[in-house]
Length: 203
Image 1 (cartoon, rainbow, N blue to C red):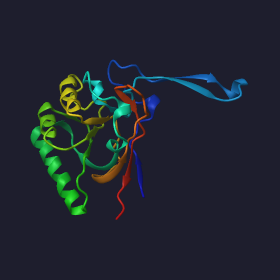
Image 2: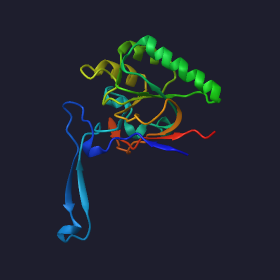
Image 3: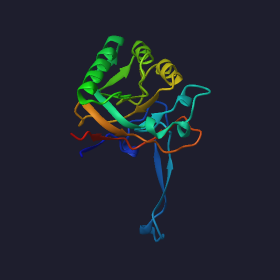
């Protein structure tokens, strides 16, 4: 089974404007005579490849630790798009996903990942509220437009959808995969880093 690591390396990752960059500090070093190497970390929960819980933009939304693992793990469809995804675009993507799923005998697929430099318009987000999609992911550090991401987040997170942001799909062909993007179990938090992996479906 072929595996695709779709995760950014944390300390060289793209950082959303205004967020603190991840940093590491060596607390102990064998080279300095210490008994072991020991590192402390300082970072934002939304650095690098990460997930968003509804609590990120919804006052009473559920937090990372309250989301079932099945939300982060399971069948996912990878589609390619460049630019701002409009309502007609997302319908076309969803239609292609459903057709491929039917042909493969895999239904339903509730996780959608977008390959390319793409963000989701509010109009496309409205279309997604009419579906049973539970996870949306893209390569940008935010699902919505970078200069105004709040509205898309509030709409979809308010509907209980979760996001997987900052993934890297350059080496991944379009198609259906098994996704594992389980986040670190950060109690009460609005987001968390994860090690996102795609696995090819077995014939």
